[in-house]
Length: 471
Image 1 (cartoon, helix red, strand yellow):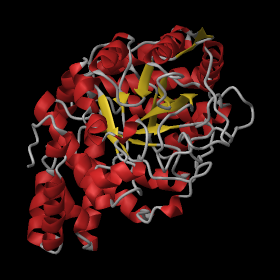
Image 2: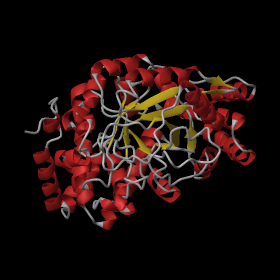
Image 3: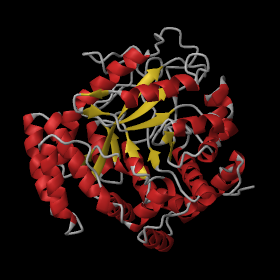
Image 4: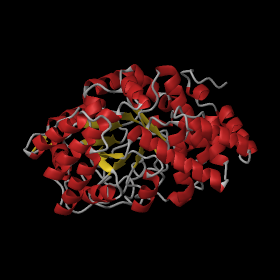
């Protein structure tokens, strides 16, 4: 029985409701009157239900699809402007006791070298990331209660926050680790994490259990209910996502939106971020083994419709995707991207990119400076800002500011100031020149006139050596 407010996974992600939704979408995909009504609702920037969004996904009318794309781009600008938040993943350990069929870290993979960073190695990785210019990390680790207990994760977080190298500092650590207990989520919150991220992989229970045959991750309900436990533990910023290509994308899309609706209904705040990864080649993983692979065109459409359905959420695209796809999908609603990423344990401290412990093949191998340069040439502001998290603008407080558009008064100036830091400390001469010109133009786009002179004053302070200024 479908119940958006239920705390049971199979009731708030209900198989019968998803199948009924897909049937309804098929029956109405050519109902252009209904499609127009749904698009009109989307223009209100209040979001769409999983059923409404599924109708748009099924609709193949080229004119209407173009409308969807244009509206998604506009809504992204309305909520997030032309800012793109930058981050990097940091892999701590590839020890894992699970048997996931799509991940090379699975327990039966005997030829992948197993590695776990010591605190000294964590420090080297963080310094390498700081020397690139990163301020925000997403830490990753396999599930292994012996090798990667919560105490190890907490120690790594403490180490990361403690390292100040030259002008570098990691100001926000997001955490992507396995589903855990309310008590452990409390410990993560106390450690000062930003967002807790956990991908569902697939919302289809039967497919989920097949893809996770062994290990604690096999428990569908425990995994799917993790965000409720995280919220109970005091973490008010959570990030969800599915691994597109593992199961049927229309099913996953409906389940993903139902999860967002559930969090909003129960906790009063939906997902802070939604990620859209696709299954990719890795050590002993061949994505062609999964018969649900997703075309680039449909992948872009999914991203656009997530933006229409959950307009306030931050949307993340990783270096799994090529520069060409990242360029397309940023226009359709993505607001956060990784840059200069390495998906191997200890990869940043190595001069050459190591491949033996990679979780997946990286398709965008550009340096952070090259990514920043590319974004600015395309008219975006690469943002290294972490001010909202540090000012307590999280959870429902962030969402209310975001939904009302007031967040722009903080985010636009903060993005310019953190970009200025990057240009002063890390950028190549060419990137710095492009960036200085961009900042000068973008000051004029600050909404409140009284803020413009304040921003100019802060930029001068940054040029003279002051760091970490924000509104």
